[in-house]
Image 1: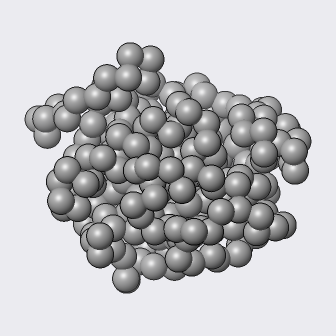
Image 2: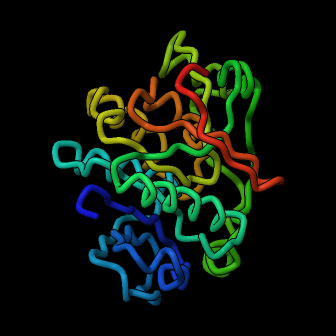
Length: 241
C-alpha cells in the first residue's frame, strides 16, 4: 500500500464510490476544485483546494509538478465522476490488477493505435458538456476556450515533435509508474500546464486527455493494457506491441 498514491480530481461529485468495494481498500488525495466539501471523506487522507481550471488534466499535471521529487512508485489518477458506471468499471480493473501484482506494477488501460498523432490529427472541439450530473448542476458551461495551437496534430508536433506514440487512455483514468514520469524533466509538465491553467473548460485539456501515452512516452515501466469497454474485455499487452 505504501507504494501507491491515488489522486482524485473533484469538482462537485459526492465521491460515494470511494466507500464501495474495492475502492474502500484505499486512501485518496482529493484535489477539490469546487466551492464546497460536500463529499464522502471516510477514505480521504488529504484534501487540497485548488482553482477550478483545466479539468482533470490540470489536476494531474499540477500534482506531478508539486510532487515531482517525492512521487510514490505507482500513481493512480481518477476523476471524481467514477459514479458513472462505465468509468467505474475501468477504475476497478486498474485497482484489481495493481492488487494482484502485490502493488508492484502500474497499469495503463487504453487503446493502441499505429500513431496517436495521425489518428487524432484533425481533431478539434468547440463545445463540450460534462457527462456528470452533479458537476453539471454547478457549471453548465459548454463553449470551450480554443487552444492557441489547433488542430490536435499541429499541437502534438509542437510539444512532442516526431515522437510516434501508440497508446492513449480516455476519461482521465489510468495509473503510471513513477519512473515513466521522471524520465522527463519537470519543464515538460509545466509547459503543458500552461496551456490549460486560465480557463475552466479549455480545448487543450481534451488534447492532453488523448496524449498521456505520449506525455509519458515510451511507458517503459508501466504495463500497457488493451481495453475494450463495449465488450468489457481486457488483456495484458505484450511489451513487444
